[in-house]
Amino acid sequence: MPSLDPSKRIDKDIADHPDWRGQILSEIRQLILSANKGIIEEWKWMGTPTWSLNGLICVANIHKNMVKVTFYQGAHIPDPEKQFNAGLEGNMWRAINYFEGDKIRRRGFQKLVRESIALNQKKKKKS
Image (cartoon, rainbow, N blue to C red; front, side, top):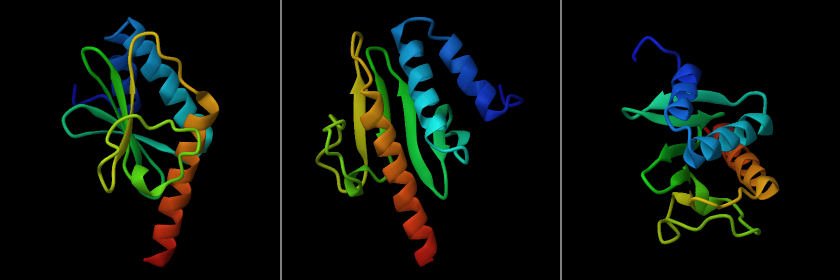
């Protein structure tokens, strides 16, 4: 699949999972991309959809029983709505694991995306 651009690879990943996992990834993707027009979709690490703007925002992986969205600097962004439910012990990454039947709390998710972008922008200005 090396000839496909990242967006088409993500399309294919979603299509390859026509169950609830593909639906979750599709909704997550839409929320990420609608948070800021400058967000770039990428495909890294041998099959991982990623999104960035002035640095990595998050990655998403479809697993057998969940969809995991990991925010690169999640430990450094506010999470007042308690979206993060995995990786809470780390000093950098934070994740949200979605299982079958889970609903995405859209507003809070987009806040995390925007906070990640703001943190990336601050770090960019310092360098």
